[in-house]
Length: 224
Image (cartoon, rainbow, N blue to C red; front, top):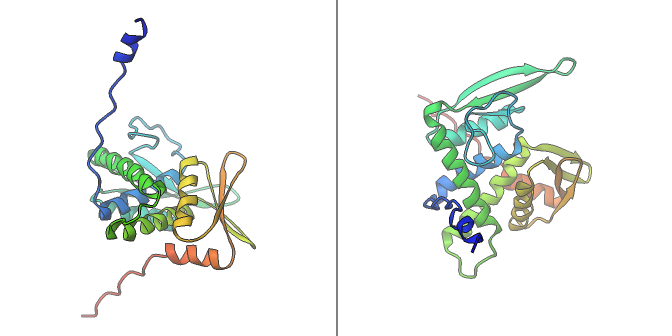
């Protein structure tokens, strides 16, 4: 048949990489969520990651988001160069540009890509009765990581009655809705102009999200 050669010529999908361990997954997934919150950098990108993000450069307009990304990449053994510049005319703002050196971009791309898809799969999967103890512990941590990334690097939309984030990434918006449910908080998704607004109600729901996403303070240095 005429259609058989076309079917036979389809490229094979790449083999599924081995799953990441839970600790690596949590860091790689959170880094991938931070990437999905950011717009592409406004500079030429000759090298692209596997998927939708550049492996070389990512830009944040908040220092705490950039510092969190640096912390995650450090734990993943990926070095990064941090450059801060200023933009704007009447309203000045900081721009934090993180650049992964060329020798480490392949590992960076593989880990963030694997972290996103494996973390997304864990969060969106239906609850399984009798799930293992590690899964019961780590899946809520992935949910908190997704919200922490959105609150750090997404477009915060805070009103008297809601805590929300604006995102352009549809898949991340779906992950946030599911993550809120896993954290026992109802969330609402509303389409906007070129973006999606994911929000939770003020009061107990907002407080729970902020408590779940808060990072523990760094340990104090011991006195000599």
